[in-house]
Length: 313
Image 1 (cartoon, rainbow, N blue to C red):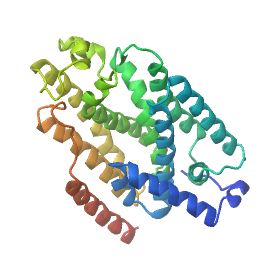
Image 2 (image 1 turned 90 degrees about the vertical axis):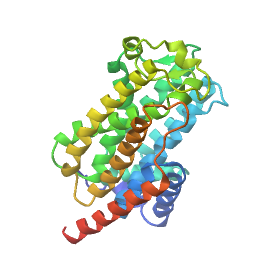
Image 3 (image 1 turned 90 degrees about the horizontal axis):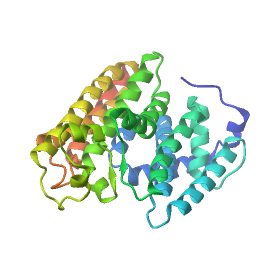
């Protein structure tokens, strides 16, 4: 899934492009707590491209989530950032190394610019809601699915173009893998999101488990979940488990040299969900995480798989 390089690509080659990718890799290494372990298991050109996309996402998220600024100012800065990016897409120059690297990555791996537009659409959903005092909620799972698609599934659709695939079934499976990852994030961050007036658990699910919205928004800090809250969170966890089946089906459809990286990423995220389930969905007493030693163990296996993939390529 690649496209021919254009003449514009030539202008981006050489030391300047190397520095741009190095800057993106530094951002990913510093900020991508789970993703970076998977990035390491990729061959260098693919790793550089993934890091560039991550850095692009990080910039958009940081602009939208800077709570030291008003929603109006955040919107103004995001619009200016978007205007700069679109100028680069149309052949303009930029001093931003992230834009230079992402432009190269989209050309090198045939990533539609429309997918990057959808990534930014996901960011602006939170920003639009931040402009009101009402809690940030989603009425149904279908509503939440759309949000998860924009902030996570689209990432998956970008990543598989970098990973490489030929079977079109990979696209739906990548979409659903993104849903699994984002539901895991939502479960982990329930307490933190509530402090920011956000509840991403669908209101229809709250009602089905007799959990009041206010009880999540105004609960005592670190108080363990009630029986009803545990049942609610367990139902969301099971939904995520179902979507992780798509991740297993996706793995064999990805280019062999990229499969170890995807395996590392799925293993870490699924491991995070398992840790949440292991504590009976108590995401309030402490924030769930996969220990660094466990991540390194997963990465070691992934690197070994990468070496075997290269030997038998």
